[in-house]
Image (cartoon, rainbow, N blue to C red):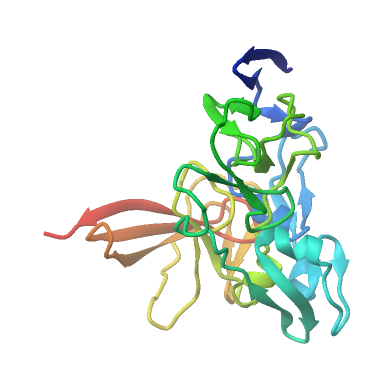
Length: 287
């Protein structure tokens, strides 16, 4: 349920109280956005279960140029409106998957602003900025979401959603398609090699599992000894490289974290098949 009021105090502000169920869709905290990005089919043990227990990704795994429920033919070009959502461009289907140009927006580091107190503005379905707005800001519409204020054209990512939104003067507190869309990871364009190897997505933010931070892949350098869970297991299994893990099974891997000067212990577990889910278990600082 949404409750919104419109107030005018030199600027236009939209104040909204928003529940965690957005437009009838329940937010899943388990890191399942990757499956939606790959157009995998959700599987529920019971029709009335609130969330899927696993996903069928066979079509995405077997077809290297499968994206948003479409299997692109050899040399077919993806519409730019789709590829730009994940900051990819000029994507063409090849035998091994899409070949794309990865965009690096010129506004990184704010070097493209004409004045330091200006800000970049964005459109919903593009990657890089589409211009700027400079002071005075008195008449610029603003949106308040999750206790934060955004000005017209600024991006925001609402809590408890997998949405990417743009503040507009029409924003009414409901996350609708006019100013919000699903976050596009673009895994089929950017991570086809990791998908083919059945690597495991790693999330550095354990509370907000959206697009993977990186991937944990099978390697001769690491043994990745599988630990079998003794808990009663629901149906389902995960694949990691050429290994199959049952629900609850896991392995730990130690990695060097030079930023935090620590050994990072990463645990990859079978939680929502078919891929593993990797999170930081703990950090062991170097002495």
